[in-house]
Each structure stands twice: as C-alpha cells, then as structure tokens.
Image (cartoon, rainbow, N blue to C red; front, side, top):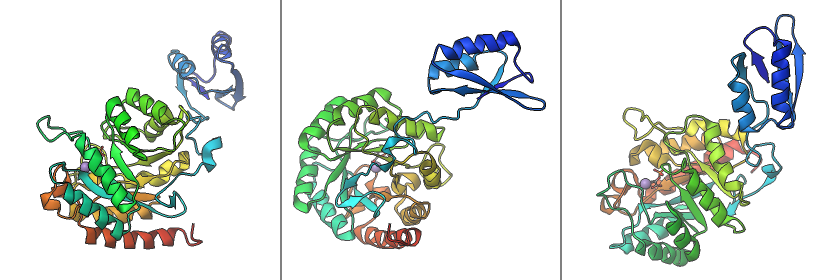
Amino acid sequence: MILPRANRLTPEQIQEITGMVESFGCHIQPIVGAVRTIYAILGDERDELMFSRLEGLPYVERIDRIQSPFKLMDVRSDLSTHQIAIGGVTLGRAPLFIAGQCTIDPKNPDYFYETAQAVKEAGAQVLRGGVWKPRTNPYAFQGDDKSLDVLMEASRRTGLPVDTEVMDENQLKLALDAGVPMLQVGARNALNYSLLRHIGAAVAGRKTIVLLKRSLHMGTLNEFISAAEYIANFGNPNIILCPRGTAPALDGYRNHPDESIVPLLKERTWAPVVVDPSHSVGKASYVPACALAALAYGADGLCIEAHVQPGKGIGDDPKQAVTPDVLAETIRLAREVWALRHPSGR
Ligand code: PEP
Ligand code: MN
C-alpha cells in the first residue's frame, strides 16, 4: 500500500509508479477517500527491490506491506501444518525440554556423562552440550573437537538425542558426520547470513533440526523470522526459534529477557518456539521463574543449562547452570503450566 506525501499522486507520478511496479509484475489500484487517496499494490508485492525503489521516491511518504515477507515461515504458508519431532516429542503437542551443560569439558568428560543421565532423569528429552563455544574473550576456552566424541557417547549412554552449536562450515560438517540431530545457531551467528545459508544447504534432505537463537542485536521480530527463512529456503523447514534475551541487558540480568515475544512470534510464524531462560537471565537462581513465564506465554518448550556440579563446570555453567533437582522441579511445574494452557491435552 502506497501512501503519498500529498493527498493524492499527480498523473505523472501515477505513470512513474505504474511503470515501476509493472516491471515487477504488479499493478496499482487507487483507493479514493474523501480527502486522501492511497494506492494498493496488486500482485506478489514481496520483491525487496520494488520496495526500495518505491520508498526512494520523493513524493512517497510510506509503503505499508500487506503481504508477509516470508514465503515459507509465514503462519499462513503451505508449511503451516509442518510438524517437527525429536526425543519422542512432537512440538506443539507436548512441551520439549532440552537441557545439559553449556560447555563440555573434554578433560573431565565424566561430569558430562553424569549430567546427561541426570537431565534425562529430570525429564529432559534432548541433551545439550557445547562442543565449540563462541566466547567474547579470545583467551577463554573455545571448545574442542574431542568434546564431540563425549557428546555422542553421552547420547549413546542415555539414548537422548543431542543439540550442539556450530559456528562454521568445518564444525557443521563434523557435527553432521557424527550424527548430531539438532544443530544450534547461536545468538552471535543468527545474523551471519553466509553461515545460515551453509547450514540450510547442509541440512537439506536430512531430518536434522536447527535451533535458531535470537541474536542479541535483532531489532524486529521479522528479522528473526527472516533468519529462519534463510535456512528453510534450501528445503529443510525443521527450524525451532529460540528467544534467549537481547541487548541491552536489563540491569541485574545477563540480557533483556524476551520470553514475552512468544505470542507475537506465533501470530506471524508457524515455527515452534523454545525459550532459553538460562542465557536470558544469566543466573541459576532466576532461571526457574523465567522458564515458567515462557511456558505461560505459550512457548513450546525450554532449553536450560544444567550441570551435576555447576561449580566444577566451565563456560557459563558455574553461573547459570541449574542443578538436576532444580531442573526436575522446573520441568514438573512447566508441565503444569503447559497443561493449563492446553486444557484439551494439546
Ligand atoms: C549457549 O547455548 O551456550 C550459547 C552460547 O548460547 P547463545 O548463543 O544464546 O549465547
Ligand atoms: Mn552457555
């Protein structure tokens, strides 16, 4: 919809705009009001270049988009009935709980094996464990290829499917070759379109699921959904959106908690939403409340950092990992919140 600066366009302006939109296969339909006339764009109006050209015209005040910019991730797309399942859970039918250590310590793998068993007993259906870590400090532990073996061994021992973050093409290949069923795109890479494209191409034709974190610096929700569209565009729509807090941090929390965006995402996209309260609030004692709030807002699940002995962990674990008993209680309460929101059992 084109809103002109003046009350209506002149015949010359209409001619210019008509020529412009026709070259993109669209037409213009004036909608004449008592004072003001606006102009509907008829046809597939999603071409970004058409929008930029129209927005660049000095006599155009604003363009309002009626159609969604997402062909695949839109809540009204043909994929809206697409279902994603892992760990015996079909997203949307029952809550999904992903839990485990922030970081696997390759020198002390037993902690991870114990954590894996403990999160399973607490009710998690997917085990998380960071093999390669995006660290702000270049001198901090960056992860280790050896941890991939620990992750897969823990998966074998517990029978839980696993989730780990990949940050480049080499890690992507190693993880897929090892059989990792859920790949995490971290907050720092959610705006790395080149990586998103590589992941999309690599998972096309596979059952792999991508857990796409929300970037610390994503302004609009459409930016978040567009990142998912980048991956889905290659053919595998198994994508879960994961709000995890944004910058700037709310004084006292690690980030600005954003579980409240769940209903807004669900108005625009069919993609399941699994909230990460751990990175959002950044301190173990705040995690359970944030987790329950996420379920209350309609999240399809949670991704929680947990460790058998947080104080012995590396990465984020000493600060923000919950212990298995807290995880078990959080999952129990989260199931109750889920049941309140899904009275018919769905
Ligand atoms: C993590 O999951 O440990 C992690 C680094 O997450 P994020 O990308 O959300 O910071
Ligand atoms: Mn972490």
